[in-house]
Image (cartoon, rainbow, N blue to C red; front, side):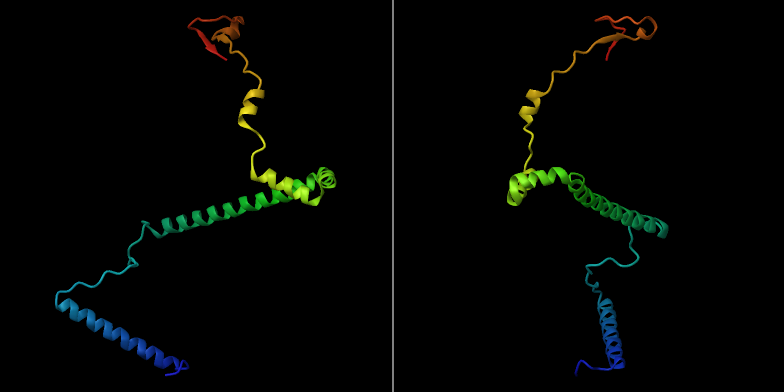
Length: 153
């Protein structure tokens, strides 16, 4: 038949198909055969104990996705605000490097770190020596080394 069948004919053919499938299932049960396993879980199986628990889990998932979207939006806002706030400096860089040089500068900035870990460790000032203070120093304001009543600050 053509694709222009009437709704009634389609529903009637679905009903006949359901009846045929039901008779086949009953005949297999009578023979002692088990129905084939389905890939989906029946509606009665659920991970949640109650409807309220399921609603709460779905709400948390929606909130989590909304927060992810909000954080991405904030990053985009930051990406747009930084050039706007530094327009004068960017104009100087563009006039110095030119458009292609500026694009190369941005690409280099985003593609790799500018700071070398070894250089940072080499240039970092040495840590200050730690002193010991007596636990009762607030009372008598004395500093000394090596006794058990002392703690490092």
